[in-house]
Image 1: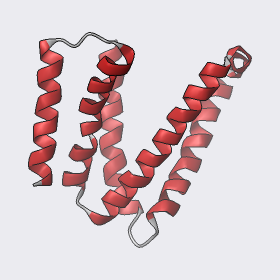
Image 2: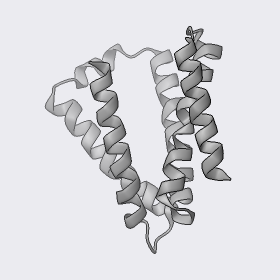
Image 3: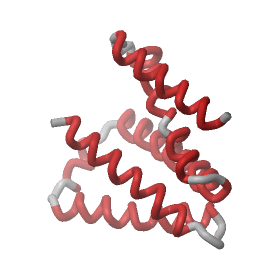
Image 4: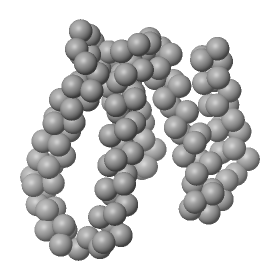
Length: 137
């Protein structure tokens, strides 16, 4: 079932690029990122409260807080650079190059998390990198 959610994520990420490109027209990309973040904040907390999952916050360890916080910082920086790239470039170029994060995540998963990489995963990562380089050039 993971693949279904991954495909939905890809679908909404595609819409994100298109909607963001239109939304940032004529405004500062950092302001656009902050506005987008506000909407995400309201939606995410709305889901947590609606599903009565907020009680789980008491179960978070210091490690959970640290790494979720660092993940939030990385996400914020990613969004800031993504919106700036969208403001300067075409969606058809920016979005695919941004997805090189998939290949980088694959490499980092092996190095930092000691995940086993199969031939198919390595070839997929290589194809993503090659495609990104082609788009950049």
